[in-house]
Length: 110
Image (cartoon, rainbow, N blue to C red; front, side):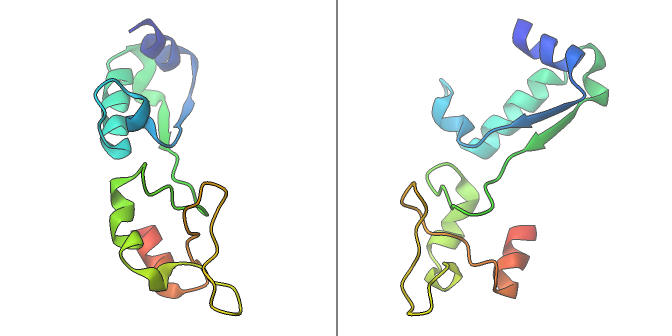
């Protein structure tokens, strides 16, 4: 509680990092952990003015972190490939999003 209160009262902008659920004791999804943590912070003093941002990696998929990436992982046509059709993977072993495709950008934005 002290940490949440301190954040709410001392920062105008907070960014919550990826894979939140994997590090929580409840083992919830990253998205659910974000909502839970945000609600907890908002209980305190100046929290209404605090902007809480959700970090969502723009290159690597991190499919084990986010529930939303299930649809991406099921659709290989959304994965970034080199000029020879080889899938390119990030340092974590997950495929990159192919933001050169309009429907991938639309999926990302929605």
